[in-house]
Length: 443
Image (cartoon, rainbow, N blue to C red):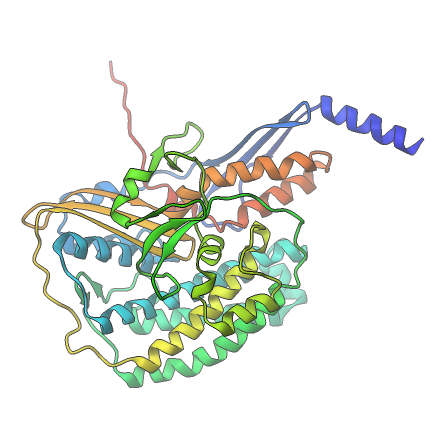
């Protein structure tokens, strides 16, 4: 009898049309919504709607001096301004034929470690962890687990303090310039933050072990992962673009292999690989393509968190981010130990006409910049492709696959799980919406 009732219920579900609407996604950066439509037991549509207004940064850059790009693009994001600065200076130094000295390169990497720490800690503790523990928000989580939220806030502060020391301030740093830095610290300055980073390293290891105990849905997706790959380092500020399906190209060939498309339901562009379609960037991609570049101690911590060299469960991205926080702490301490102030904080850069390309690993994935400048150093064309825009197509495909076996769940539960699936990506919707073709019909 029970089996008959279940059979009738399943048959009824197959005939139904179900629409899941999440009008405002909570605990993501920016404003977006989700629509999923199920007909005849099959998911026919999954749309991540982004309705924030366009921000026109690419247009703002046209007509400005090439030296202004790092400071202007840093304003695109208050969470990962360093990523925008680093991709901008890489592209400008590429077009001008400049290579910075090694101490300057390492100092940039150190600054970027601070950004990984603060951005990942924010996502892990304040945006993502409440999903797994059944809380509406980090504020509700803090009522029962204050020590967990306090650890996350202190980890974030350690990253912010490192950014403030090297960048002049923790939001929209002001010391980075084309050719190097306007100002560099002395060794004593870094020694002071090193003590804080040692605490952060212990807290990050604790975070990996804690995140590994969270309840993860039994779900995997066959992504094509795309990330930078460096000959010797876990990638942050440079490398070749590689994928798990054979892509291996220099950054300057990005536009040959990737394309952006306008989508009617979104203000953001959708990126795809020209020959294969959706792909995934971000911590999961970096980890899967560069596990062998992690120090042995960090690899061991990843295993203690329940990970192997490959992870295809997007819900476990919270563990991968924890591993990257640990790596950022280890790398920052290593770089501080090596640090010798450069003889010159920057090299003079003379503009030359041409096009330059830059790509670095923002906390959420590869961030591509391309600029064309004239002989006077004036920007005539700019293209910026943030990680969230690259992941949008993968997010929608992921949602279709995730919802299909769960359509019998009640509406509230399914909507909650869909939101959680989106937060796996840590989308920064504000960063994804800075381009829109404006059409005005006039009679």
